[in-house]
Length: 224
Image (cartoon, rainbow, N blue to C red; front, side):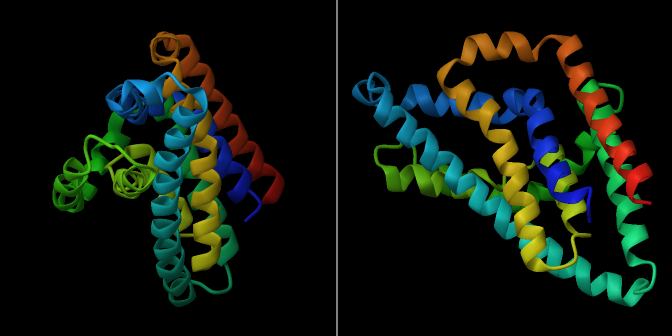
């Protein structure tokens, strides 16, 4: 799917303002909970931020591989002949919906977060046991749990990963999505106040949403 991998990265990148509101706030709390000597040492701080996010993206990849494997089997049963066109249209609709969601025009996507609530209720206590984080291993393990936090943007990406054609392609899709979220999440951990001010600017959210919508519709026109 031509719209897939670049779209995955752009979803993560343009969704940065949403990430600041959810994952960014978590990143800020985790940063300030680290020992003072770690926070004051730039190299150590970046190392911990890296472990947190490495674990988070690993979980995204695992979820993406499961979604891709399930979706490929489902597609073969539904329509092997027109599968590509169906997937392209499905991905475009979802990406446009995400664009409206980011711009604040379609809050309905937030409701899909409820789907992950049962899983999160079981994982969240495990995450609490890892706090306060005092070692890189704890940071990595917390990141693995953090990756399953219910999030409308992540779940939208997983729905698109369903149509990537295989477990491997689904994992790659979510890897690129996760990499796209890194700039916002990591910088929020370091520059929390400045980034939050930008994220609260409605114009910035609208620009991000429109950019994603334009990309999705352009991809549909070019590849249909």
